[in-house]
Image 1 (cartoon, protein in one colour):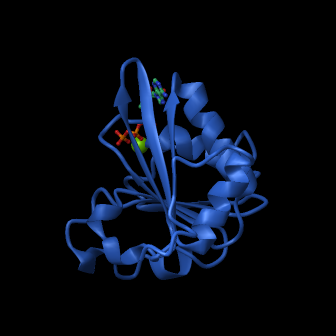
Image 2: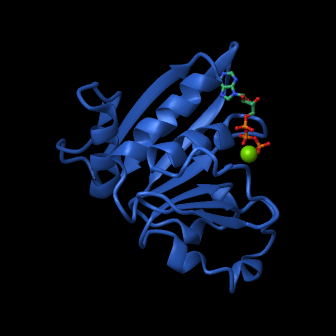
Image 3: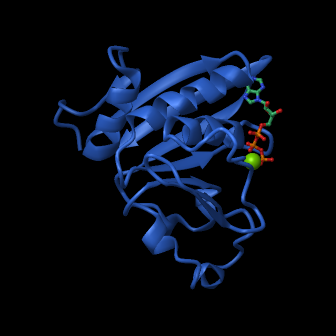
Length: 170
Ligand SMILES: Nc1ncnc2c1ncn2[C@@H]1O[C@H](COP(=O)(O)OP(=O)(O)OP(=O)(O)O)[C@@H](O)[C@H]1O
Ligand SMILES: [Mg+2]
């Protein structure tokens, strides 16, 4: 399996949002992020940047869709913001339209993916963010060709921290 990983230190909330914007500008329809991190880590802050990079207008406020589970924000590419925090049982996800929203058109950003792992396609970007000093440490792992290509576009000429794309390791 190809896998590529970028690790960065984000000194403040603006750095988190800026990374989100880079991802948004480089995204293609069907791209998926699974965002993991403790409460208050910065998952929603990154989502706000991602929305701007996708061309969601500034006046369109992006907060956590905890109570709605899913919110769709129209942009150059639609931003499908999904928060599975409240899903306790897979049956509760039936009828929400997640299959149509994740990995089809638009770009899906799924918070608390561990609540419903089967909703995440195999080829997705896994994003892990956690507190580190006064800022945050972020790891972005592209698991597959689509997600790896997305991260390479977003990071342009920056060197990945791990690239298992051409080693033959499976
Ligand atoms: N790199 C950073 N350094 C310092 N603070 C940051 C950084 N990134 C985001 N923050 C701040 O962390 C706080 C929590 O961010 P956010 O609401 O995005 O977290 P979250 O992961 O969505 O939390 P929850 O799981 O509770 O919804 C905000 O005040 C945000 O400004
Ligand atoms: Mg949040």
